[in-house]
Image (cartoon, rainbow over the protein chains, first blue to last red):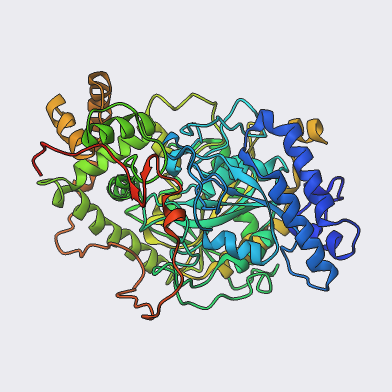
Length: 495
Length: 98
């Protein structure tokens, strides 16, 4: 069910591979097409905070030379872009924050180094909620990114630029990071595929830290097949990240299939509760029915602590934030306030002026939760509940192979509609946080539309079993047409 | 959960964020709401449950004790807001209790 390729920038990574290998198109031509499209569209979508035009063309020329000498590989010559918290040596890396203005990392993130070894072309860096804290990308200090499906709505977050860029055809694929849903939720809201791998599957070296026990880098792509191709390149142990796992990396692409007979899909009652938009629930239920039609067996499972995961997250993540973000002191890099008569006053004003409201809020919550007298009541308590959440997933996975749920309780919401109420914004991640707390992999795949906006279905898997959720998502995708829809507005304007 | 302005001032000092009084007032309400929400965890009996700091079974991970190239002083100082020779330059820190 391959769609017709009208413009190279509308194609999948697999389509581009064919065009490049057949010499119908060079990587330089493909890269120029993307750069043109970014110029035409990004004034309105605002996915990019930096476009690395010269570097992209150098990378592309290099890829063309590599192909001319007989080399091939799934990502060789394919243009991509990175969330702006992935370190790129000599290229501005802002984390969407004023406090990192002017910062140029001295080294590359391991994922970027691996993508470069594979010959991928860097188009630029993508907008995000400041330090990845948010669910709408409205917390960026640099720009407000729009959802290509409706420019008055948010793309989700925190990897909103990464999701919007793929949806708008501004990059073949992108990388984001997911701490509590920051790849999956924007993928859902923008109608693209977003994968959060198992904690430890992908090296975090060079990923600017938010919550170190939860952060994980993942791909945003047009298709599940593309997700598998990118994961195979970025996954694997890295001596520079002591939490990267030594578990062997399979060829995820080779393990994709279209037959789901024998697969047991768990449906947890706790993910189908009041608070989810009816159109979202209907689309996801229909998606689950489709998995059954493909041969999967549906099993009722129970994850009783689901309702506590959000609270657990909003203690543990801020606690890690308060520690990780203590490094921004205006001394070593980034912004320094000119106010303040001495060093302490410089810290106080640098951090007040350099951080946005949400980052300050989380530093404050985390500092409180870790402060003398409150540690047991908040941080230790949350870590114990985390044990419960993980144990419940372990028990559920004795009865099923994959757990299916909505990715987000809502479709894309209007820009500005949730910024006044931090708690309402936090609820955007209610279905993605539990898998983050348990460290297990999960993917969001387009499963329909509600009010004209995309809906995502989340498939959660066992630790280090990305292969099974990719296989289920791929089989589902091949039997539906949701992933082939394009946002009209953007597509016709750029096209 | 009610926080006083003094509580907020104390946390802000620990976090080294120089909030204005107006920001502290806003933060007082918002932190109170968030802390009230997360206090729902008290509904769970976790007396016998061990804590999970991270989900991998990893304990100590040892690296080979071999020299390898490092970054130059210039590369490490390149992003400094202010530099003096091979040092980060800051304002003085005097007269504070540690």
